[in-house]
Length: 504
Image 1 (cartoon, rainbow, N blue to C red):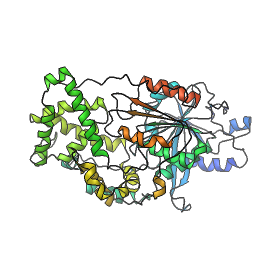
Image 2 (cartoon, rainbow, N blue to C red; image 1 turned 135 degrees about the vertical axis):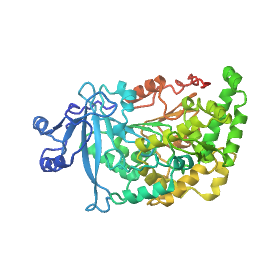
Image 3 (tube, rainbow, N blue to C red; image 1 turned 45 degrees about the vertical axis):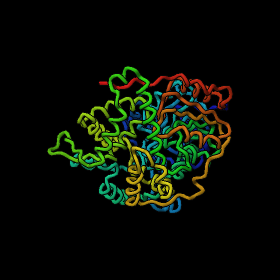
Image 4 (cartoon, helix red, strand yellow; image 1 turned 30 degrees about the vertical axis):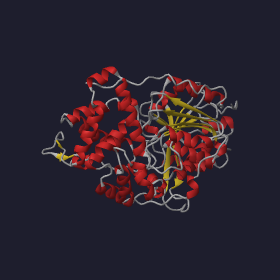
């Protein structure tokens, strides 16, 4: 672990010479905007006169949603398309949660979020999980281009006027097309790749004067971590990969098999639970029955606040079930939902689908999700592989076809084959995976880990997607402090029990 320290984190002073910084500082002050409870602007030239260095940027005291501690927020300006530097500019916004003791080590923790489409500055839950590590390290939250304050590519796929859209489609075609046309008036939708993001992140690292980063990535954010360590290996001190998404596997092709495996594990856990088995002895058969009924197209449902009845799509229900299977805690509801539907009560399923569709509009920049997956994943799905990938699964090819249809309407490029090559690195890395993850199954970790020569792989029993437990916190804190996997016990999370099933 490096023992070098920066100047106090509250000042965030860099080692960049003062000469020439003031002109750039004055230009950037005019463009700094952060909408969250700005209290006052701190121009750091006063600190610079004491240490001989200055940030070529102004930071603002601000608050971050879900975080009680004060933060420092700022932005840098980058070209949207580096190949056209005189064209459209983009502001990349960030927030720094300073180390508690005011004297931060030079290697902050940098969360890389999933989706794609989650904004780092809107994810205060990371502070709660990482609080024990912030005594002597900053937490650096950078909104990926296309999210949060960094030119969010927002789409509104949820319809309050026509709920039938969201009970039939995950990506309603008319809404996808309208969103693409609207965003194209202010953004080049082909310029929001992970490569562009990691270039932005490296610029933020340099301008704040940080040393190598501790990347803390989960789900699709692990793709960003992989791209960053390949592009800037010297800028990474350590990597945490929670529920890793392999860079060379085309999503969503594996989704159907992964969900089917998680469903089988859920049913097996039901059958091993005497109390549940007594209450719901026929849940497997009832699942088959409701899926067959949905396939006929004859299931119509009422939607609260709307007259008449609307059709419920088998594929839409299956996709929502798949989302519940990401974690045992949410999968615990699934058998109860199946039994209710088998008795003719579809209301809990309808409510769940509509609530999650509405939340996705709020929580994700869905335009970024399409910009990334339509370029990095869908072009690499080979049609001859589809039948085997979806055979004998309850989801079938529904999710894949929905996303393919959306990508036909979305401006995109095709990522280079070299950008999808597996990563090989010596950077210390901790992989954490749940053995009951219906989104990123264990084989994703097994596939990716060999390229990380200095690694530890931690499997959480009876846990799922990007979950966090005290045993993981213990391992990560030690890993972070020593900057090495040496001496870590990979079996520490093997004792976890499955959450109880919902029965009423």
